[in-house]
Image (cartoon, rainbow, N blue to C red; front, top):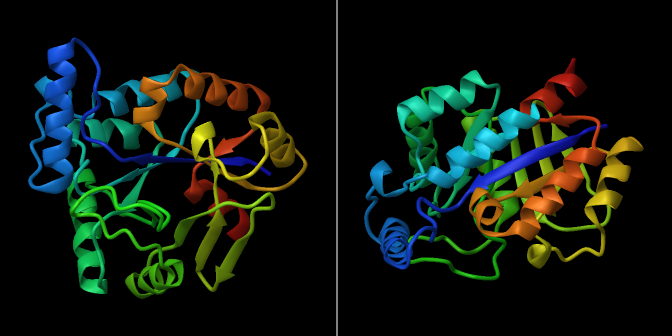
Length: 245
């Protein structure tokens, strides 16, 4: 069984460059997450996502990329990612009702000019990250929304030494995730152990955030080690197509 690579794009801007540049980008990201969405590519909007995509393309690895309505890509970037074989999905952020969920879903589909098949949720119910953030984590409600909207899967945020997924007709709920970022992990397993589990026949969902990959050399090392030990890396759609065929 493979590693399923999940990529959640949390931030529009990250603090890189000169001191002034870092301050400006932090301010822009704060505005983007809390009030309005200034998507200025010249000031670094989603530059970290593009850098991360370049890395995966060079490695010959495809992933499922999940976008918030505050981190929507340009048409050119979306077309490039789809053309390279990446899957684009929704990273649910603010919705508290089904109608708000549909609104976020449609924004991602319009921006990416592609049909969304699955989604993830920002946060695990422990922290509210901004005024727009619906911080509670209610996976059964999200599964119900996904089924109602005709989507194919929801990838959740629980952590466990043993990952499970639950099939409901044409919908699949992936309960668990393993974080590449060590500071997010609540399971005592190394990336080498995770790769060994995948090689032994267990599908493993692995999550990384492009912002952390750019900002942390430790995250880059962990992901590089994982990929070097993993024989198969798939998107969620590729995995589901395989088990449903």
